[in-house]
Image 1 (cartoon, rainbow, N blue to C red):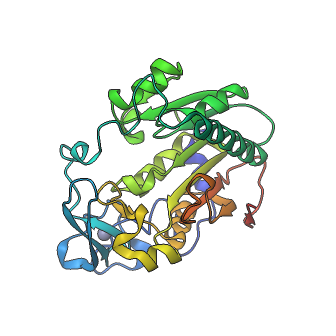
Image 2: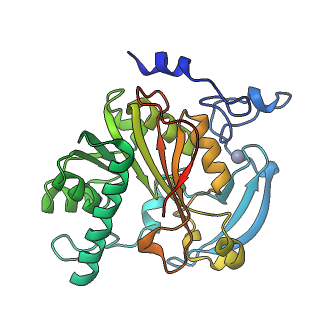
Image 3: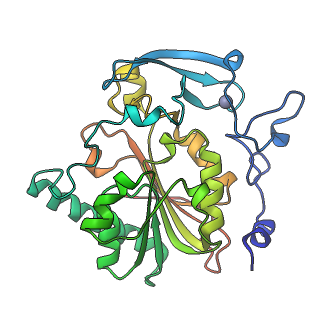
Length: 305
Ligand SMILES: [Zn+2]
């Protein structure tokens, strides 16, 4: 059965129907429930500056602004596609054959990824299916999934960033954005978006595509820096994880919840912390499950420890 057939079975939220708000662009004269699905271009006349911020790598100045149309906080100006590479430092993923971190750190990191996979398995169930890690980086999470019997797939944005997981870990990695790669519909049992949404200008489109390629009942894991958290509000432009202009959208828990539910996901677990970033306790992670499940787990949230 095609996913659009499943989609019609969803009982849409009256305030956030599937595939619509909150990231869509509102059209003048329409109500909130009639917004367009086109991505918002955040026109200057609808932006209110929150504060200025400096890229710690290049020294370039940006504004973090709130868009009255889509209600998102965004980095402005957003670098053009052909400029963004210049804002990523060389060696971002570390040397190809060497460790990125000291051995003990990498062992701790691997233990953490094992814990994360087990957390996902506790939601997804005992079967080992297909998992997609969007923006898989060095592929260490996929390596752990594979060790535990999963069929793994990664994506990266460039051949360069895919070299380590491909050549060192022998992982399959497709190049491009999720929307351009076009995996088959209903293909994956688990999709992880680990610190991905804040890097894209149209998170709505990415979540819609994730829903299309996720099997009914599949599990989506999302983690983003929490722009609504106390540390973001306290440190503002000095907040380490603001990271302009690499982070082009700045999501709060409420915005992320709305976007996920608007794309047909029900929340299963939520956590306000992420162990490898515990130095500032700024992250939030979600495990969401496609509600078109034969195994429907209900709407209630259970909090991760
Ligand atoms: Zn906007």
